[in-house]
Image (cartoon, rainbow, N blue to C red):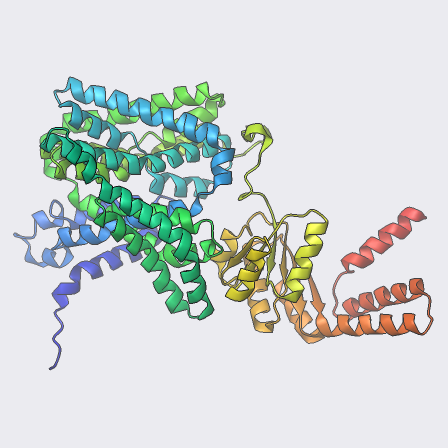
Length: 595
């Protein structure tokens, strides 16, 4: 039977893709978060934008999203993927090094903002359950907007940036308990407390326990088996299965899909597949988050804003002022400088994306009336629109340059091992293992990358920090720490693969020291042309070592042999029109010092 394609069925998807293709480049050129573009596009394409005029101007139907409900269901996966990647980026070392700001400043910010907002809602006549839900929703800031802004401004390592990240980190951790608490409050509103209510929590507990058990016992073996198949498509499918599957298990247990994805991310963060999974799911997270914010813009009740402008605008202004004041006072209490405290306060002043998740669940469970919830959502959306402008103001007040004294000291002198600069060794074969061993003997921290799952498994069993992934991808190299790495060593025996990695790394870091393994002299010349600092041809080195062995065995003094070997190596480099080798410079420095 011949298939029949209905173009109208794909109109919403085409509109979203067209919006992404226009919004992201345009807003990046303006140095504004693309999320604001998605929010604005949602307002324009939704029923309160062009849709309100479509009945009079029929051709506008082609630029209006027809099924916002279906789009919203798919867009919820954006939050799921966001929490999954947050779980992937967490580590016990990072939590420990920032614990004073995360569990101190972050916890107090959520508690104080929630309390103040809830009291304001109570004064406006809301019942206690609704006031708590509104306070919890509006106490959380936007990780999806603030963190990209910090990265673009290169302020994530400043005092204000680290404090802001710490607060956002605790807010992300608080989402799951808030959703669980709302679920319990919704059940208690329907029936009095009874033992049967406690029994109803057993599926949720069993679901979380199943996620942890599956993650500990089966997750790593499953991904290891998929990696050995050496199929990019299969690994991508497995990565998506982990995210969506964990979310569905959590949903079946009565919890949110986002909580299940967060747990899966935490479990994967301890494995060697962490960075490769991040690279694979990042495009899906970006697209689905864009769809999520478009759906948020679609749901923005513009007629309600026009009907109650003073209430909504006053609520948005009050929310921004209250959050800003609370964060500033907490930042000063935690001994941040005044300028850094102001910058952090302005970054965290607006509401966040989880307000829509929390208030949506609260309205579905009957804890918050629809009109009240919609009013709060409109105010939250307006506050989110103000975040880039507040961030620019905070940047001017906080300053662009980061002084060393501005960096907060690590608690108890402990550094975050995830962010400590490390030499990056690509390839964990025989050569890579020897390089790693020499770095370790000189107490130089290093991290390895390897595409062969069996070699990665061997390295992990030996206690080495080896990650599975393709080092020819920019995203993977950056996640392995290339941005701060003092050097890159490429030890692979694949000439074309080595050339690709050297070219990518040099494009990302013009100042990086790159030492690469070459097949022969011709290959070494290509690597030098691509930007390698030093190329070591295996044929030349093997010849030199053979010459050294035979000369020593036939009675030539060891000192003369070593000197001649080094001189021949420098002659080879000069033949390639390269600077003097590191060994040659070291020997020349030694001679000058002795003289």
